[in-house]
Image 1 (tube, one colour):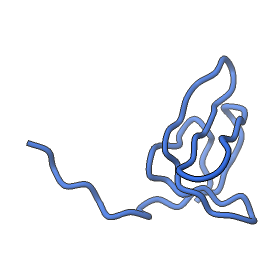
Image 2 (cartoon, helix red, strand yellow):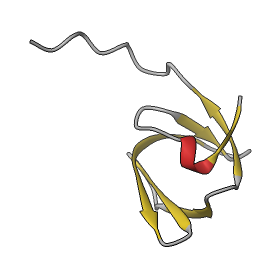
Image 3 (cartoon, one colour):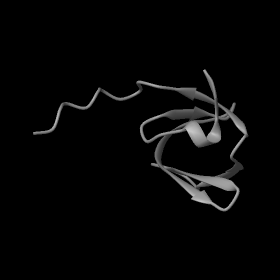
Length: 65
């Protein structure tokens, strides 16, 4: 699916056409978003930049007590 960068969340998998990487964290930096991945360099994009995302890559989290 295609999402705007500010809609990303931890656990999403971003496909940039070459590599698929799992999102570790999403941080706001002014008018941009910095996407931190579990492997590789972070990616800085505009808030309204469209990215291709797969949700549900990992097993769903179990409820906390």
